[in-house]
Length: 106
Length: 119
Image: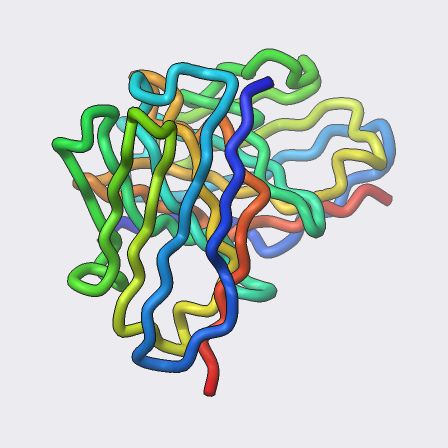
């Protein structure tokens, strides 16, 4: 079965740029989606199809995908960006989530 | 307002059954694929099941195949998950999530309903 690997945690200073990676075999050939989940809340889609932002998501959120790694980039990080982030793809009629990354804004 | 509201969660004994419901509003439910996603306490997201807009195509995670059944009633704008032979490891918050058209992302999520399997 297909697996997605994310770092358990990422820290970023306030106002700096955070990068969260999602590794998978030839993930560059798949559409990658990213979700933000704050404690006690449902996930929110922040990036779809590698690099597209849904309406209402700040331009500070961007994504890329190539080779074996997809990356979610959060520019000018704010305290409100502190959350768990999950990547997701479809493989063989199965949706697969990464294990999640806890983003801490220092 | 586009909204998904789950219900039906609760405490059930191992081996028991439970039926979850998800009521959709604010969009044309019959035009969208739907999914169930769960999250065990303190754990990550796990996809459970998918159903196409018409209900003709259905997929399940291996962990629930043969025990869970997804269905929908487009006339009632509702999605369901029948869960049988429940195990302790099925304990989780269950979310219904709308599939973003032609994309494969989950663009709208409900608030979730808690299922606890314990004796």
